[in-house]
Image (tube, rainbow over all chains, first blue to last red; front, top):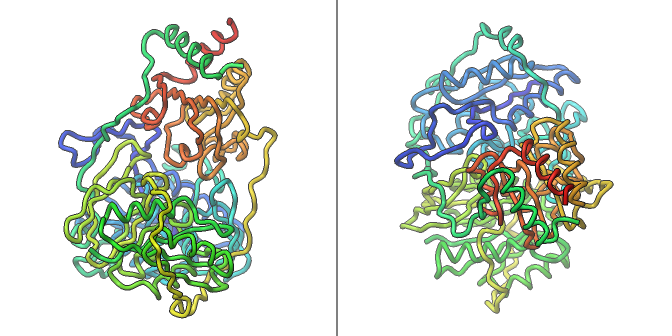
Amino acid sequence: MEILVCVKRVPDTAENEIEVNGDGTDINRDDLVYSVNEWDNYAVEEAIQIVDRVGGKVTVVTIGDDESEEVLRREMAMGANEGLLVADDAFAGSDGRGIATLLKAVVEKGNYDLVLTGAQADAGAGQVGGMLAAMLDQPYASLVDHIEVVDEKTLKVGREIEGGNREMNEIQLPCVLSIQTGINEPRYVGIRGIRKVASVDIPVLGAADLGLAAGTVGAAGARVKVEDYFVPELGAGAEMLEGSTEEIVEKLVELLKAKGGLK
Amino acid sequence: MAQIFAYITHKGGVADDTALELAAAAKMIDGAAAVTAVVTGSGATLDQVCAAMTGSFAEVWKVDNAALAYPNAEAVRKALVNILPPGGIVLLPHDTFGMDLGPGLSIKMNAAFVADVVGIAGVAGATLKLVRQEFSGQVSTHVSCDASAGAVLNIRPGVCKADAAGAAGGQIVDKSAAAGDLAVGRRFLEVVEAEVGDVDITKSDVLLSIGRGIEEEENIEIARELAAAMGADISCSRPLVDAKWLEKSRQVGTSGLTVKPKVYLAMGISGSFQHMGGVKGGAFMVAVNKNPKAPIFQVADVGIVADILEFMPELTEKIKSL
């Protein structure tokens, strides 16, 4: 099975305190720790496991700049066979539809049976997979936490729905799936693994390579734009307990007692 | 302003809470709008929901088709594309169904799409100014959306306060014939219910809930000692279940269980809306997190900035000494 996995380099929210910059036009991007979007990492692991079972090839693609190449190499160190970097100044400012338009062009240059994305990334929209599928006229399922290959034309997929329940579907290939965390246990990637793929050639695709008309992607084509970043003024946030650890523990125990938190 | 449609999700003949929240959201976009509810399904349960929606919407569009008996987003999308006029604004709940439907629907309607809307800040002509969150809720954004060719907006459940069901006296319009061919490449098979665990956390009065801040699997023992001292049950946020450190039956959140404890102690949990959506019933909430900007401090009653791996043993000692 030929599988394309779409990945993104994002600030790691577990490792960073995200702050708004001085004029609210962006977050402070200096000194941020970046990594591959967590959901995407599960998607790559799933693709590798499928290929291990039924044969085929895993290609990882990202849209970004030169720095984005590092996440492709990381995923290739996990076991993805090939990487593609989509980069062009003309792509800056693309909204979700613009990103999906770029990925559609990438998909159409290949011959993929299955396209995987993470269920969401740093903007928390969860939109690119569903848009891409609709543009390709392929079936789509989101929040996938289980995949079985039934035959060459069919997958059985589980979707994570409310209440910890799983919705089982049969879906025809080729299709697009967005992958939820927890579907597998992504393998560890060591420095040695990354070194092994350090010199593998990664093709870079720009606007001309993808045959895209101006205005369909990038800021000019975006109907949805982030105007500013801000931290909301909160009416009532938490009462913050301060002081020495001893004092804090003392206060907390009193509160817990009063609220029935100690039995 | 364009015509506004609210897609009503329902189960067992009862509309979801988001139905009236979407009605409220539509009013925030256009106070004068005659909002249309769109209800898809099959048979008697569909009729019940349509009847109930006439109280809150000017029109209720009913689409009855056996292929829509279970809300398969692929089939629902086809029906909506066939019945909705171009240029309309479609409101969906940002839940596991809305996430499945919204992005693809926007492409097929050639409409703009905005996911997980948490606020409506204003409308200027055909441009909507919306509020979203990024980076796991650590920062908010104002987003402008050019809705001149229509828009699909996924509204986060719980953020628009629903009006009580009124007496709008809405008309039910049967759109079933216009829905067209609903054959799709994805077939719904069944819903597999969540497994029940050894402890039913939905019944617990006191929950010690642990998140990513626990860092290592063996550190869960530190939390177990504190829970034992408090007489609390252990629950957790999603990353611990993803890592297979705790059972799914311990997970609090929209994709896990909804809990209603008296006291909820959130240890090393950042407080994503998916997690907070699983804590109901006005629990007294204490949050301990080493990141002072963690969103959980916005919703907790009491907050402590500390490393839980250092803080929990101190708390355990103190409680044991009482």
